[in-house]
Amino acid sequence: MLKSFEHVGMTVSDMDRAIEFYCTLLGLRLHLRKTASDGSHIAFLDAGGAMLEVFAPADGAARAVDVPEGVAGLRHLTFLFENIDETFAKLEKAGVELKERPRLAINREILHKVAFVRDPDGILIELAERAN
Image (tube, rainbow, N blue to C red; front, top):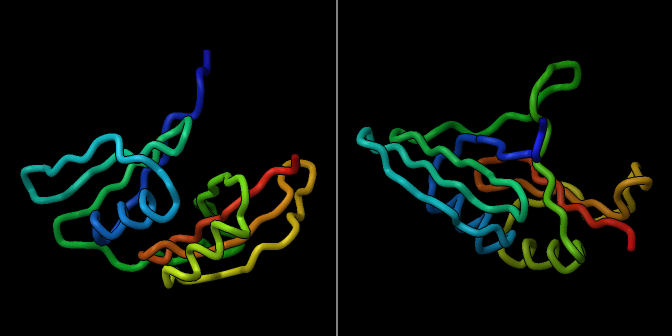
């Protein structure tokens, strides 16, 4: 029987930069970080109920490419915030690459507002806020 969503895994080019973005700017918590014998790094970041597994190959990684329409794949990661206007302003001030400013959500049955930014490797991140 299913208990919960556990984690999603992703590859980044630089572990320190990824931890800075996801933990310092977005508020995830570093749960575990290890370095493998080949020099690659792995970390688990607690996102408040599920984990983000981050893998950084020893030789780095190329910038992420968006999944085109009509191609299967992960389109974006979504994190829920109390106030995305404040979060977006914080990210903008920190120089994060902005994709779409806060707006009312299309799927208003689930979310109130959304905004989109890119992480340091170009991965699309959705900031979401639920209606009260």
